[in-house]
Length: 105
Image (tube, rainbow, N blue to C red; front, side, top):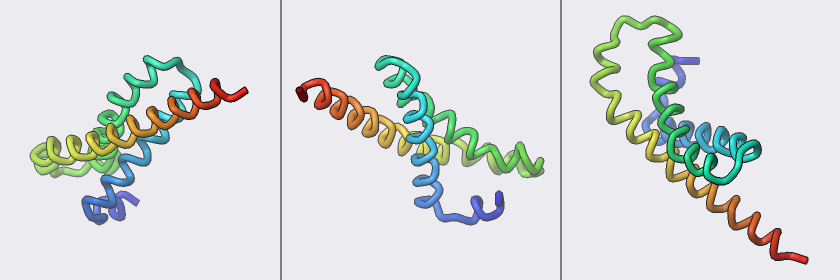
């Protein structure tokens, strides 16, 4: 499974990271109030990106940690930024839906 994830192209892994981030933020938004949801939309994507990036090393104990360290800023930054954009979009959509629900009689 890890080999499959590592063999995927960068756009596919970026979409996977963003989808996981949006899902986690969606779950958090169902439990917590507004400000925490906004903070989660900013923080969770980078935690998810970091975890997805380092998972192959953690799980399979790969010896090439230096190679992973060299690319970490690019991948975690790109995946995290994509997740933040998606998560903020989700929170804005959720906020507008809640506002419309309150205005309906």
